[in-house]
Length: 353
Length: 89
Length: 154
Image: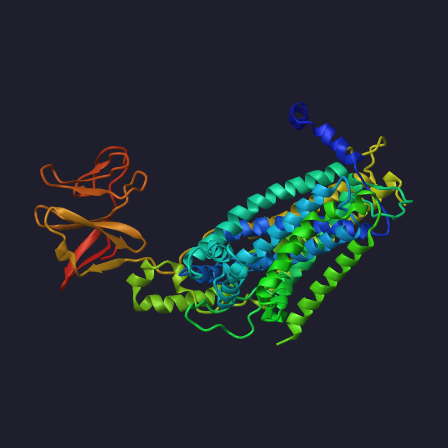
């Protein structure tokens, strides 16, 4: 019976050739192999986000009147609601962390060189999508922190000339952060970004299967490569087991809290900070002088960030040496300086009052 | 067996936070049965979230870690066996 | 995959595969049970409504009806052409649409717009797909209000 079903499927789906493909696919082994696990780790937390996110939408209500209450209902009344919510919040942070490690390791290993330019571009786009997830999801509990962080966040484009005000109104959906903003954020968070990210993730993973993992420039690979199936998959499974262990420990030991319901008329409380992954932007805006050559400091920071993001996306096309299979010093320096800048600004934002 | 016992325990464990919550709700409903019944439960939630019981959190963490440890151990053995077969050093 | 070698002995590989599959399956049980518990709606802890008071029942003119909230469900209060007050749970016993009072020229009746079931003013199903009469409610006048209560309570 089972044999019949399997052979029926095999006649209609190219199962065998897919299996052969994965058996033939190899993962190189060298002293930097450890970094290969962080892409899979990001994927694991992404899947956790999809599952827990769908579960949360069953109870969450995206209106200013009900949002905070519905989150409270999830946490207080729904069986294991607090667990699902904590998993979603912690997995978001772990996903972003794993993604940054994956991205910077790919950068430093010059994995974006030919023929993997599009892998880099899709990955960089996914970084923006993931940060968008973080920003839009942060408002949804509608507590004081979420409200003011979104208020500030949606004002960021205001300093851009011409399109600034339009950009702010596009994000807010009205003049104030209110019901329209909440439904916008909810729609982006649960419909737009999931669809976009599914497309990008499929593309990213498809290309990765096609080209396999990149061997860093100048790295010797004297050892026999690891067959992807089943040998590397077992290694991935082990790393996922570890990742899930860390996730469940964080979610149960430090379950997510919830502040007071947002009051648009209350004055902003002390110490509003965005999530850690937005701290470099936050700290840069704080450190910027009010005016430089009669241009506002905020404008300059935003301009630099916009230029930086464009350069980051276009890295494979700017680094000419990479396509020739050589490491280029300026780009290595750029990467390391960027990592140091991000870490320093995050630490500064925590340390400074 | 251990796992099954833990599942049973986790399923039968009363949610103490929710029980306290229900009692509070009954107090308010006793005053005005028509309005309380007409309003959906969500509106009656208290102003603060109740932290889940430490015992519940501990139990969940313990069960999941046992599951993961067993899974990790078996995958590790499978990996070693597969590596030997593939001739990986 | 063969779990036994040619001598009929269980191989290490087969044993490990079996153990791993078994462990994964058993581990899935608590995960699925948590998911099901999360998704199952919690029973409302509010006690079921047994009676409501309508102070403004005078607004219901003769030969008309009003649908009111009875707990979480709709109830229909009828002021019959003969001057009586009657009340029923307003959900059609077929598929749960709210029934509508039809009076005036015709014989007064309750009609369900969804699939055309018709009930008389005693709640009895007289035509259409409705399988049983409407659930009746008890009506009493207490002071200024009309008290509607579940029929089972004295």
